[in-house]
Length: 328
Image (cartoon, rainbow, N blue to C red; front, top):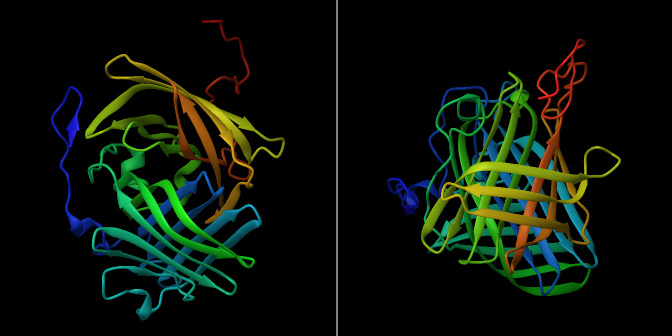
């Protein structure tokens, strides 16, 4: 894939669309994510399915499965033993309780969901190169995102809930990541991803780790060209619960010095909160506008900076220690 101002990124083949060979770390995991929205039907979802084969208490499966519609929200968050039947012959993922599977078949990432009266089939097709622009050095790469693909695309299929049925025609972002993922290293983060199709997609991550490193990076995709961000500013419109939010604002300065101002407004559906390994991860589906374009997004955050009794150390816009600090 062409990258503005630098060597092109490697575009991987179908070998990275299936389960990967497990590493040796207790925290090694292999997970896939889909976040999507159909604006016309006002339906969408956020889904994560991951295998953790070396977990200290035995192999486990993590499922965050959420579907949103005008009649309500379906939520199923589980952490269950990994079974032999969850290792699908196609290289896909089972979820430990037969309510969800993910497979890559004939160029589509297919999520099948069946849980009582709620069911869906989500068919995701990429609209950009299959590349991994994540940093390969530092605590983020070493402890949380060794290999990571975040790709925009289209979502079709169908969804049934509470006696209602919809044919899906939406947009979304998928990701596939594997390697060591130690949730104890995360104090807070922002994962802001969105798309309006081939005119503009974006993937932005701000990360505050337990060693007090603050990392921000991201990129935009337009057509077949990727442009990295050199400056990122994210403001979250937090609710009084200090966990959920109603949208936000993001300013991106690209390596070309072009500036993109994006405003996010939450859809009517509530945020979904996934509590996993002591971290509450909040995903809120939002609309966004930028320079006459508009699209859909997932504005994901965690706010775990105190980690029980931890004293804050590295504050972006505050003073924690006692003393005199000159205004600079």
